[in-house]
Image 1 (cartoon, each protein chain N blue to C red):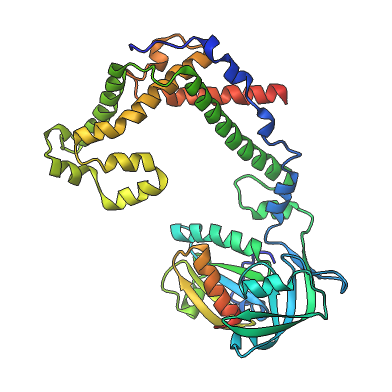
Image 2: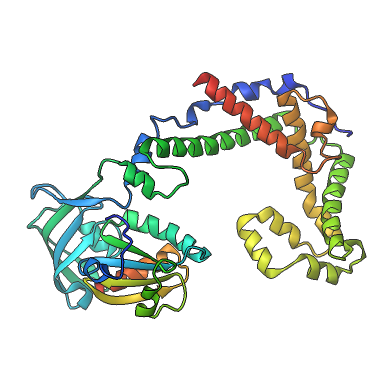
Length: 302
Length: 106
């Protein structure tokens, strides 16, 4: 490894800047948990006649127009759902039972009279609702709350770790990686892929450009990867080995920067633990360790 | 309205009133699971829509009665009358367009 290891002191400000207040707590998730548990259990109650119509209210209307869809003695519409007609649903907002209005749909006038308004209500969450979520081992509201809290906290801690890592990489200097280290890391990635193909009897080094494209590229798997792993999709679109290396270069450089920055942040000194030129994606376990460090920081402060 | 799991015995009385999406699925069907997530959001945002889930692994007689050839299959009922159907996975926008048509007509 030619690139020099960063000194932890260069990056201490990054960890100090970690804003853990964005990580959700039990209190901040209470409404979310209640919403999740009661979704699908919403019921309607009649709305007082002097109450103006709100978003999500269920309104019974009389509509008249030359358009058959809008010529009914009685039709039930959920305001704002957009399933009947967006303009008409918007025009109902703020009006009360007994009031009338008009809109133009497809160039034709549509008049409406408001007959009845109901408002959605959420019940109090129950253990039965928690069981209805069909999550393994969860039978009570308390267990469901703990499950959601962990999921949300994990996602937030992961996001925060990634942000801090980006900051640290910027702070460490982007052009500090030795070109030979990048080449070594790319060779590692290429050799790993070549070995996989060798198992099925294909040596990528022996392929012509045309054979390469046919072997590496599959329209079906590329479309899938385009959606779920765009970086990998770019690599499979490479027409030959040289193009593959060219596309791999930014990822290899990023992998080295990540590994070096992370081992400085984590105080690692054993090169075998972080050297991405002798170990493919050396940064992956370090990212996990760094994420755990942020979690510990959150638990300590919390 | 909660998601309900009807039986063949109570099916007709259940869907006799209001708008119902009846969702015929099997446990191991991947597209059924994806559609389930889309429907869950859609029904949650539209409490006016009722959702009945029929697991064909539990009761195959639904498939015979409604001539269901593949899963997932959705049948849309308004006040007990069959108004339309959709087969396979569909995005929310496509589902909403079909629901709008079945609920309110052309």
